[in-house]
Image (tube, rainbow, N blue to C red):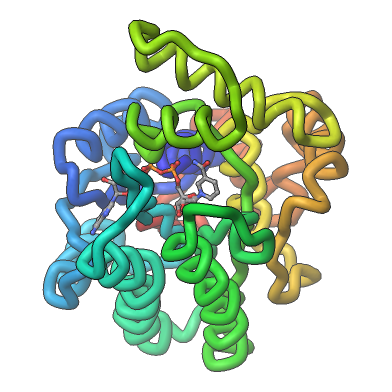
Length: 299
Ligand SMILES: NC(=O)c1ccc[n+]([C@@H]2O[C@H](COP(=O)([O-])OP(=O)(O)OC[C@H]3O[C@@H](n4cnc5c(N)ncnc54)[C@H](O)[C@@H]3O)[C@@H](O)[C@H]2O)c1
């Protein structure tokens, strides 16, 4: 989801800071972004959002490279799993720390830069449909995401009016996610009584589960991380009409229809005056460096 968001942001002219504790993965995504937006369009930084100093260092690198920070998107989270479905106290603690408290640390760190800039900025945190739909066997994750929903509301109040804070709550997105290791997939297939062969490859098991989840949606289509990226950047964009919201599963069918239409007419996504100008500048190859939106950087 983070990768797709970075690529889509670059496609729209943003400078992107790809930050992950997996530095090699961040560098690979930054290289993909550079192919879209040029050498200066992206940097990769190491970050461990469990550590305040690591967050501050990544923010300092962002500000010193691009001169500021206009958008923060956080997709980092963990889903604790184990072969027998039982998780330890340590896993509970880790889940709440990464999925909830780290979001607080990150946005709190960024808000100092936002205050100094005194410019409009946006934050998008990623929650989950599980925040409102309880499921057997994922209590720690579900509770953490319910807390993220409320954290979005808290930040929306405390950072208003200059900074808009929103969240998205996707349903299951198997494609491209590292959150579906074999043991979790097998536990889920077992939970839903879906027959599978023990010798099946990881990829075959993941597709089996993805097909099952797709059938449960109103559209019977698997959710693509590109859909989530489009929703994230819609909320991160300059539209002043978007007030704090958490888009959740019940809107899934509507969103899919909406994004299909947006994909076929990309200019609608650049619907602000600044966005349109930026898009036409990209088209004509003119420099963007003087525009505020050209300084956009997503962590
Ligand atoms: N995939 C799904 O089915 C699904 C459904 C609903 C919500 N979500 C949420 O969407 C977001 C993105 O999910 P995804 O499937 O892209 O996940 P992913 O596992 O593919 O990516 C998460 C990234 O977070 C990074 N990360 C983990 N701990 C970190 C830390 N301490 N510091 C820095 N980086 C760290 C990982 O290295 C990884 O690159 C998550 O918040 C997830 O909870 C996912």
